[in-house]
Image (cartoon, rainbow, N blue to C red; front, side, top):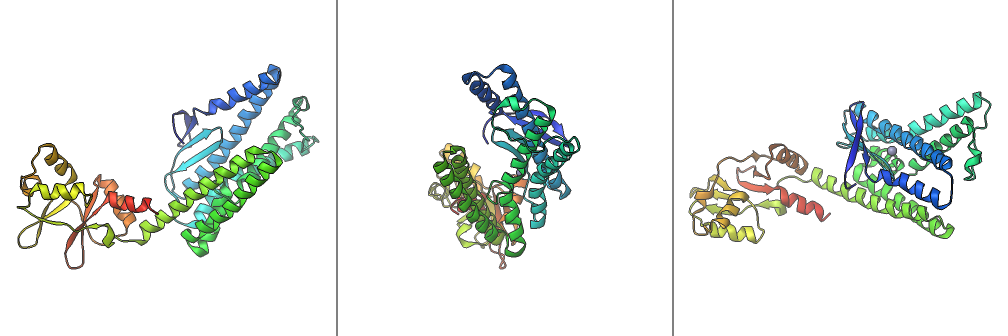
Length: 360
Ligand code: ZN
């Protein structure tokens, strides 16, 4: 989601933000209302219903966020836009069952509101379901309002349980499958089911003239693709280690090597950082990317590498790529020197891991 959003406040430690396009919803209603010559009181009713509906969406998102908090997963913020709300979690919970609880908590909030409203209407002997035909004159008493809000919450409840990404149902299905099948396979299966739903949405939307469903279908396909590639990337990072030969930069230079040789390798994209060895094959230092760039800027092609060498760098033994990326991020560095079992060093660079990930 791009662009500015405005902070409404912080509730339960989670910032609630409005995306700027949110205002468009109200302008759109006003525009349609005036075009069809509705009077202001009718437009006011729609505004009120919209606000209540978005309030229910906020409660839905807080359902996810507060459940995530129980499993020690922080929510960065909740952003409200015309297409709905989004609770941005800092990370995915590691246990599938936790993902299940977090995903199911949102729709359950709307289910709970529906039951609550139905009970109130029942106790007040008001009709629970309004046979709403779009005529706002029908909404002339509090019972009718509650009944409309009940209907909106039921739609939110059912729609979010459709087992397709980005709906919560997609996550619920994935987390349940993950318990037995692991995350990658489950994501593929639930994305595939998501595709089937999306295609059904699109076809039904086109043939019935409900184009909004067709648009949702296209949206679902895009989201399912995103989920699949992020599952592939996650799988790659967790199941590959920093000794992967195609990721390692094993180039060796001497203290007397000229910067020209390093610059050639740099420009040929063979690496960004270079190891310098002594004559008895010991790693003595690294010429880092910033220093290579400096040498290019200074026109020092004939300077010996030792002049641009630095001595501080992080070393690591075996770890998976995920751990390597996290530690690079924490230390604000873009490479690690990997020492293999025989004590032989090579360089693993952040950009190579990311380049590889992008091809997945
Ligand atoms: Zn949700």
